[in-house]
Image (cartoon, rainbow, N blue to C red):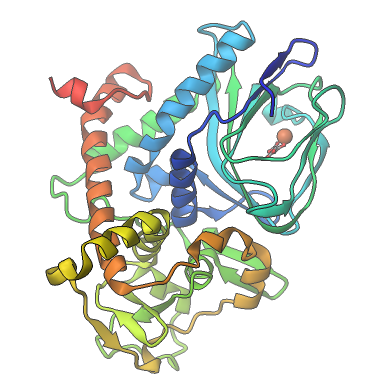
Length: 398
Ligand SMILES: O=C(O)CCC(=O)C(=O)O
Ligand SMILES: [Fe+2]
């Protein structure tokens, strides 16, 4: 992609604007927290959803990119200090998703949108097939997404665009809309949610940074009279299943309760013939740790290899698999594999090992604790300023 601000067409391309680690971090957030989206075969993770599911600390990785894109739009389109972010969200398109010619302000309830920024978090050819972006007029006429690249354009009919159907894999973007209308300022909405959180938050840090699932229907991908829960599907595709937390009370033949309710209760995960010893407080907690493992796996694995058996005390015991503990969930895994595709899981073909997973658990706890600590410092400033912005918490502590 070539950098250019095309005055004629009111668009801007920013090749390699996001680092590859930020792309991976946002992918980790989407794969652990995403819900079924607003269009067929689309999944999404919004900032308000993160706050609502006890993961407000996970909005921190979005902040510097939100700010640098807003600055870029203001300087490139000559509207300094005029813009507000209207929406920030991770959006993934799976097999079958596409969108025909449109402008982004083409509905009466979207008229406030002035500019669009689409950040590509994974790559055409490597992570998905199809999904090429097209502008109806002018140059460039087509864009094949590459992780880290950004395209910015006016949301009006000077930039009619479309996206080809995704044929395989999962196409992931971070999409932002900008507005001049302060009534549609996303920050104001986030501040309202965060102020509520600040009031109800327990002083006890335990569990307050662990995810709380939203209602089951937000995770249910339906397809005719079949379907799957996206939390199960994302775990299954990596070779894991959910297990009862082995208190002996699980009875798969008991049809009196909705099996999906098991996903909001304590559970374990298993793989092959083994069940991991650690108990998770719910499915999202387990999913977040597993996704963190795959985000960090290459580094973790070389670390455990270098230190040899130095893992010592971290050695985790596994419970022998007893099949009646596996949660029986109404998920169509074949359908999930077809919809999500296996293409973007190439990196996951690593030799799996529970000790690496145990190390990932403690690294994930450190990561979350750090973000949670930073959030606690930043939140009062945000509420006071009525804006969500990035400052290095270390600077504020001084
Ligand atoms: O993901 C893209 O490349 C563009 C998506 C789009 O056109 C939209 O969400 O309005
Ligand atoms: Fe669009």
